[in-house]
Length: 167
Image (cartoon, rainbow, N blue to C red; front, side):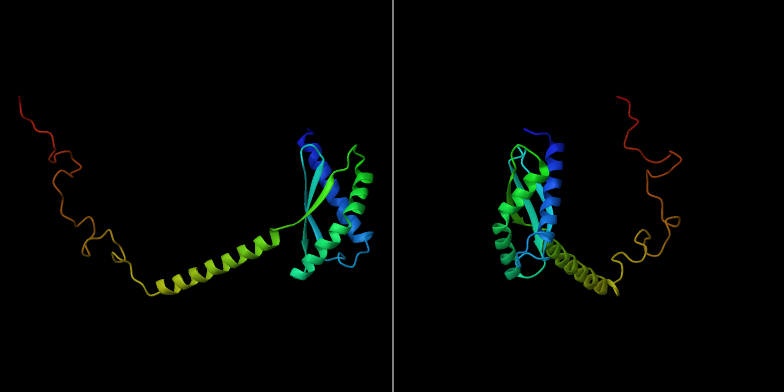
């Protein structure tokens, strides 16, 4: 089992080599500049690598790119093996990255929340407070004008719960 730092370095190298090879050397019209390598992960034993990619376009473009990556897998693995210099070149698996779709989903959720907030703000624009402007005032009197409650004196002479009976 390789250490995590070595696996991370190999994953970064694979990402760079695959991206460079796709944009410069592979002449498959299905790939072109529509594909972007976003991330790469390598297993702990350095035998398998998962390459995440995004595609600029619609569903038909995504299918074409997936087919193009599948056909170019051997060439890309050979390029990774030449660049990495490891005993065993990891097998490559290409997986469409869910990040753009997740970002679109989050954007739509944020838009819906903004609309609800704006609707609530408009409804609350003409509303009054439930207890009046100052709910701590009783019938328009300040707390200084309020009558004293038994046992609530600050001089200590108020009623207490303790009785002074002798048993």
